[in-house]
Amino acid sequence: MAYRKIIQVGDPLLREISQPVEKVDDEIVTLLDDMKETVEKAEGAGLAAVQIGVLKRVFVINVEEGYFEFINPQIVKQAGSQKGKEGCLSVQHKVGIVERPNKVVVKALDRNGKAFKLTAYGFAAKAVCHEYDHLEGILYTDKALSIEASDQ
Ligand code: ZN
Image: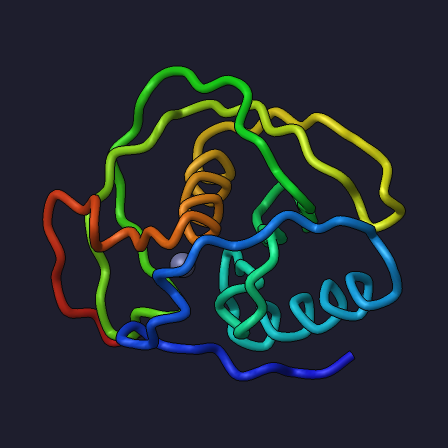
């Protein structure tokens, strides 16, 4: 595993649409390993591959319920709403209030190329939506109701 540099807002890559993974091979497993090391070291709640400069539809979330990896994710259902603080490892020293669904159902592939479905609630649902947006070139600051400075 290797720590990879997290790109920051202003880098045009963050605005690109990530491409589907055609085959879950060793390269993807290495990417996932690097993302794990990177998000843990950065103490983030999630990380999308584009944030380390790889335009592939891969993200991870690192939440109370556990650590989850998603390849080619699709949000197939969403319900409810929540409004809360959000930050991003690619947008340092800021937090914003964002409205998100309170529950999402995600379909994706795991690191073995096996399909799975996961239902996330509350903070985890927010993390899934935030990371999914990265795959579409969207940052939370695009959606935030308000943004303020933070020491994080
Ligand atoms: Zn982010």
